[in-house]
Image (cartoon, rainbow, N blue to C red):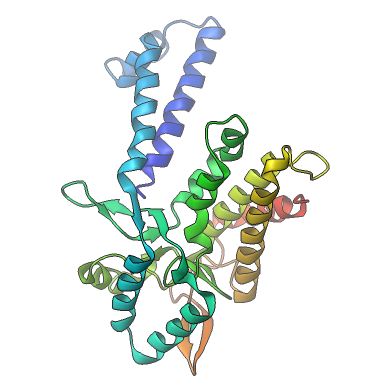
Length: 299
C-alpha cells in the first residue's frame, strides 16, 4: 500500500505529542519559537488540537482505499493466468509449489500497492504493511476490544501464503511484491523494474516484518511467556509459526545481510542468489542486531 497511509498518521500523532510537550513546559506559542512556520498547517494544529485529531483520523481512514480481496476461484484464475505468462520451467516449478502447499484453498485479502489515476486499487500484494505491524501495537487493540485476532492474522496472511498466491518463498523469504492479481501491463512494468518486483526480497522489509511479529507476540504474552488472555493462545501460536517460517526461509537463503536478494529456477529447483546491484552493507544493516535481540527474547 502507499506507505504514506502508514507513516503520515504516525507522524501527525508525533506532532501532537511534541506540541503537547511544548505547552506542558510553558513555552511561548509555536509561532514565537519558530516564526518561519507561520501560516503552515502545524500552526493551525497548535491552535486547534481538534483539527490535528481530524487529520489523524482522515489519514487513518486512507488505508481502506487500498483493500482488495479475492475468492478462491478468483485466486485460481489470476494466478493461472500469471503462470501461463512465465517460461515453462518456472511455470512448472510454481505449479508444483501450489499443488503441495494448497495455497489456493482460502480466500485472500491484502493492501494493494497503489491506486490508479481514478483512485482504484492496483492489486499488487506487497510488504509495505510490515511497517504498520512494526509501528502499531495491534495486539493491544485486540486486548481492549478495538480489533480481533482474526483481523490481525488476515492482515499478515499474505506474508505467509506461498507465492504465487501470496508473498512467501521457501528458502528465500517474503517477496517485496506479487503482481499475479494485476494486469499484464503491470507485469511488464515489473519485468522492466526487477528491483521492486516479485523477483526480490528486501532485507529491510524482512527486518520490519520480523520485528513487527516479535512486538505483537510480546504484547500478547506476560513476563513468563503465557498468553495474557487464554483466548490469545491460538493467535500467539499462529504468530510464532509465521515468525519461524520467515526466519528459517531467510536464513536458508544465506543472503540475509544483503540489501536485497533474488532467485532463479533451474533443474526444477529454486536457487537463492545475490541481486546483481545489491549493496552488502548499508546503515539499516545494524537493525540486524535488533532483530537478533528481539528473537532471543521470544518465549
